Length: 192
Ligand code: ADP
Image (cartoon, rainbow, N blue to C red; front, side, top):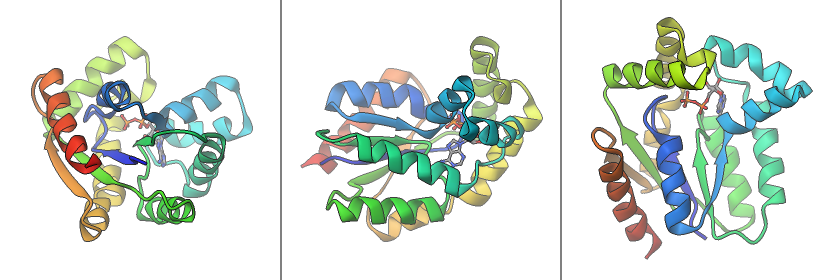
């Protein structure tokens, strides 16, 4: 199996590039952000709990996110592999994911980090907010909080995956198709 963690700060382009990788490599997309937003839209208890954190740009508690991912993994048999997008976001989440995947002998193949400058992230998120209506993309202070939370809680995962020799840094600045090409080259290398 080919299990890819697509990594990067908010606004790095994970969702956009995930679509392309799914098509090219026939993988399943698991985006915790999308899953949480569907829970909110459906008005579930999980969604109600998550919404308070998401609106402020804080992380949803590990226990909530991990429970959700466990369900999804259990329901997805017969897949070539997964693109994890927006997950893991803490070292605790990464450890749990490793344990779950090791039970099935299908470990993470690689972690691909989309590297983008902070000013560009803020610009991209504010323009996405105008189109998508996502409230967490409409305020500069919430966006900056998300980037700070990323630096504090999520950035340490770079070291976590580097220690397993699974880390790949990718330039996430520039034209979407060119970034997609850079990702494709790395995934092909990992897949061999
Ligand atoms: P982005 O990466 O652009 O900020 P996402 O759609 O991935 O957007 O996530 C939106 C919000 O959902 C996050 O700010 C956070 O509150 C919550 N969230 C998503 N994934 C996780 C996760 N793995 N752990 C905790 N919270 C999460």
